[in-house]
Amino acid sequence: MPDDATLQAITAALRDAEVQMGDDTPSEETVTTADWKAIATRFGSDPAQYDPTTGVYVLHATGEFTGEGARHPAGTPAPKGTSLTVVLDASGLNRLVLRLSSDDDDYRELGPTQSLT
Image (tube, rainbow, N blue to C red; front, side, top):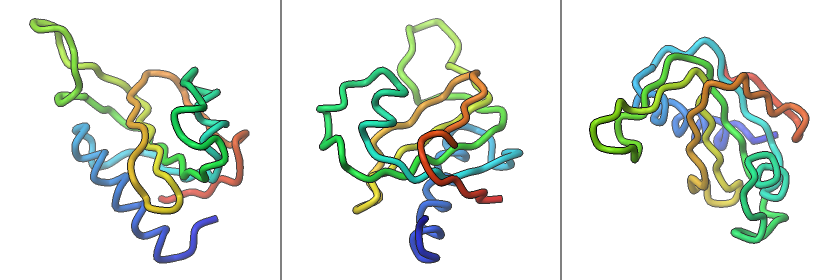
């Protein structure tokens, strides 16, 4: 699990994404420690996009989110969802994935999980 300084940094990254997606008061926030291969497999992405052994933090929040800045066809409403996932590489805390969905996402099977709320 992340140390205190890292925990503060990843919590700030998640809160920034929550505000960006229109809900700064989510009902649940968690961090799961995993590797890129596990999360790429989960999302159906190419594990070779990054080193598969790259450590990642999978940040998850439950709330009412709207992706106003997300790409979507002109004339259609912005995507909405109740599940926000942010994936950061563990070494530099760079954002690799920002995912908005209506699924009840649970990442506990990928590795150790800790509540951020």
